[in-house]
Length: 197
Image (cartoon, rainbow, N blue to C red):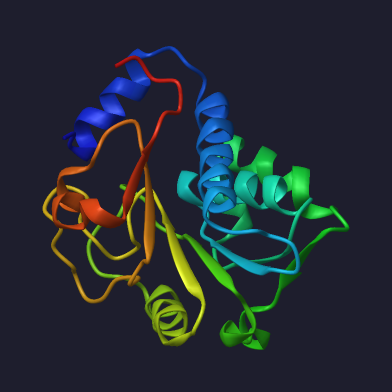
């Protein structure tokens, strides 16, 4: 088990560029979804924020769009995207296979799979109103829910839920089991993203 702080230190000390880790993380999400589903004729919604978790989501969307219909709901602020997440945003911005949606026009029940790439281990304090509303929309939908690294709204170290969190059917966490996911081990996959063991 690893804490969010230990994970950050490990990433910094590894000298592996964040861009590579993000690429590996997004591909791992795509791979895990492909292992579980035949993606032919599936509709996938990837919900992203402007942190690195959103960057992982952009990569996953790029990998998934060759086999499924992929839409992105970006609820972050483009000006706050860090360079690695921004680079991955740019890679899919004009991809004809991926549609970016406006926040108010999403039928969450219209999807087979929803990927939660909103907040990863970087969560701090209470959720803003927009994220809180989207969590409700995700949870109320009939779609299969996949969370990237940790369900949005959950403390990665304690498993405590600040206000509410995405009720994930599958959690794809990276490198090692996060302490907060201990009681969700039966629905968590630990994916290797190239960090030293």
